Length: 64
Image (cartoon, rainbow, N blue to C red; front, side, top):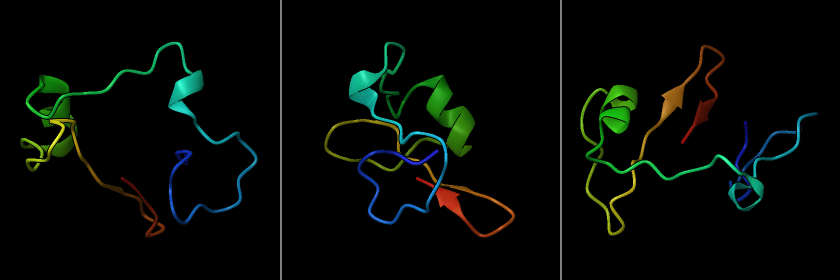
């Protein structure tokens, strides 16, 4: 799923995700168990404390 603010999005049939229009979206903090589960470790430090992750797929595409 492409996020609304991604710089390079491929053409897709599904709508682009906009967190402002989501009733269930919530930021995940980098020290949370959810972030550690996705990243395998704590996310690198940043200014806002939000979890940063990259997931790579078999076709060499990725989500960040």
